[in-house]
Length: 253
Image 1 (cartoon, rainbow, N blue to C red):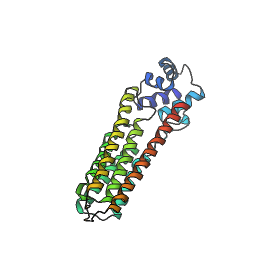
Image 2 (cartoon, one colour):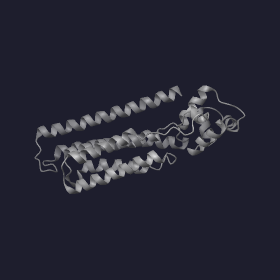
Image 3 (cartoon, one colour):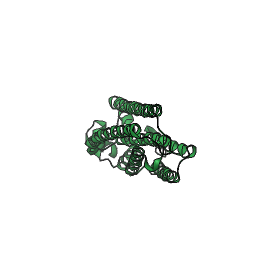
Image 4 (cartoon, rainbow, N blue to C red):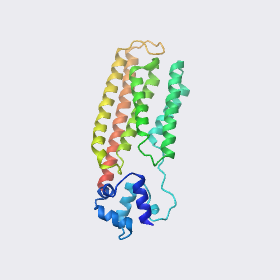
């Protein structure tokens, strides 16, 4: 049974025998011998193989009839929850409401696609990346005069989506050809995040009246800058945690 489940799991991820062998630190001939039934992996290698392929050891051994289903991304679901809450709680103009509705629908579609179409693992990444970019840019430019509360929500939701995209690019079964792109993507994401934070801070400092007509004072500006600072620290902590978890998995693998 291992011969069939191993081959099916490998092919469903688009991995060649050599790419899987590189992840498991064995030769391609060893992977081939497992798939033909000539040899069997030891327990430690079997556990690592299940982790790389995103399945359980029971599935590989034929003890489970279905693959372990990956839950929808917590970061993406959190972003959607934030968007729905701000849409229901904060009163704003009609253009902003329509804009929020469009983003909520797009996020919902992306989340449902990820949940039910696990075989097309990479296809939803461009969509989620675009949604995250739209959230960050619209927040920085104060599109439609959305106001501080919605701006802060948009920038935090966009940062969470950006972290989701980067974390998915760092999955252990990523083909070797993506390694350089992943490193560049991480640096590019951080650079964009810094630019967004600087732009939003400059907007807060320079604007005199927000989208709702409220006249800004030094006290309100300090409060808004403090909110941006808290969000920035939270994103940095999330990224550090993700990096530490990745290194821990790599070392134990």
